[in-house]
Picture (cartoon, rainbow, N blue to C red):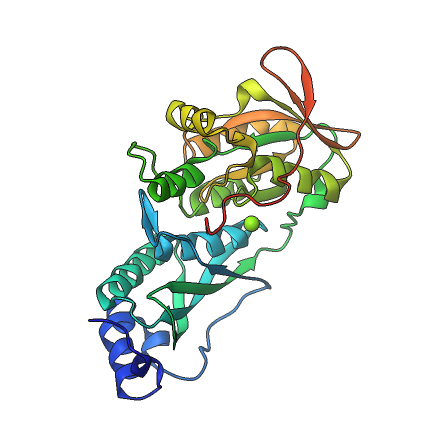
Length: 326
Ligand code: MG
């Protein structure tokens, strides 16, 4: 069945859409109450984040907009050391979208929310004129334990810089799909609860965390450098990248430092805790390729020791990257 403007009218077609797709995919006492707002239990300090997802295509190798819209928001909560707890979803659906497509997305969202241990507590749908596009906004709420203080300005000289896995997978998967290139590259879109909560449980002195999304590692490190007023010195040889993504990027002339991921993070940790942090990440789901890639020093900017023995400055992504990657 195709979505029509009637599905956005607030009348019977709207309630049918909610009953048959969204309620079927996601059911829990808070949502099922169908009240105007969700009233839920709280705890201590609250972390809140919101993000809109406009990725095209809606389905790509290794993921889809539903999974992405949960991972992106959950990961942003985790990057402050918050335990993700609740999520909301607002769909903007263009007339002509397929209800089966919508159903697949809603089910994928529900599965990912379970994996990330967040409860979907409220949602909204709007239908607009258009040509079948689907966009999702999610807001996430998490709780921060006393004593947890993770922020980019906390990076200190001497800290070690860890990345949790291979760079560029999401970017390369989405681009391959759009260009009709057949390969086995899969998006890395994943919730990073296990590695972050594992580091917190192991009392790792985490100074800063960032998920490596749009703009890639180069952009994230520049942001960290700016907020902490420190230099991020990294080794090119230590930056993890799969052979397939490496050749893909070389053929298309893409800079791996500016390719986006959706299930990778950079952790800046106290040097004494770096080895334990690395093993916690490596033993967690989605962290097996983690590596220590460098050290924070006095100074500023991002400097890379190149494989051929030189040094170069890594800039953040300037201008337009790949649009509609998330
Ligand atoms: Mg982020």
